[in-house]
Image 1 (cartoon, rainbow, N blue to C red):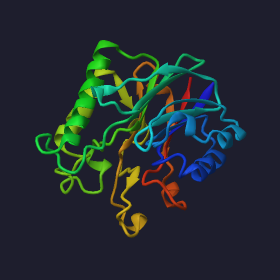
Image 2: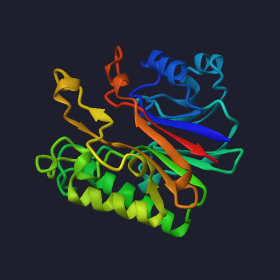
Image 3: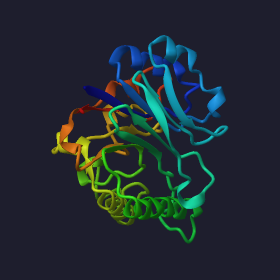
Amino acid sequence: MPFTLATWNINSVRLREPIVLKLLQEEAPDVLCLQECKSPVDKIPTEGFAALGYTHMVANGQKGYNGVMILSRLPIVDAGRHDFANLGHARHVAARLENGVTIHNHYVPAGGDKPDREVNEKFGQKLDYLTDMRDDFHANRPERSILVGDLNIAPREDDVWDHKKLLKVVSHTPIEVEALAEVQESGNWVDVTRANIPEGKLYSWWSYRARDWDVADKGRRLDHVWATTDIAASGHSSRVVRHVRGWEKPSDHAPIFATFDL
């Protein structure tokens, strides 16, 4: 049975509950993965989601920071969470569908402003998180799995508005791009979004600092949908729902969708 999945950095699920409900009503994904929920699990506003048929949830939360959740109208079971790099952050949660597919939802550290771990602890945490992901996938090769989330790296030249200008900007530096490639290779992951949309500029994030984000269009593709090679070919119809970035009180990210025939 086909199912449609979406991933979205919501930047506070409680503050932006209205636009989560709007997305569920208008786009109706079967599974919605949210990052940067900024809420303890028991404070997540689930009643409105349940009223729309999204009665299943697994989440990993903390007060005011980070936080990831998987909301579904299909039955799911909790498949665990892992504290990558031992940061003590709620950045990963996993759920398993009845068809045996495991969905991993990640919120990789943003990495601060300076791409140098010697002067910027946050950048070091980001690299350590990616290294831990890589090593975990080497040790436990995933199968029938989908990985989504705000990975906070735009890997390709056409994933950013200006490749040359951003080479020394956190999220598009060569060391980050290489680290993400190692994560992808270690788990036999396929970038489903780019498999479906192989050419052209593609963004999922636009800074709040831009006076008119849509006209300036200085975006980056920080959000990703991957799948293991054994199921990647079933992924299709990938899209960025760009106009959501323009909703009232928006996140600075737009959701990314993909459908899987599994």
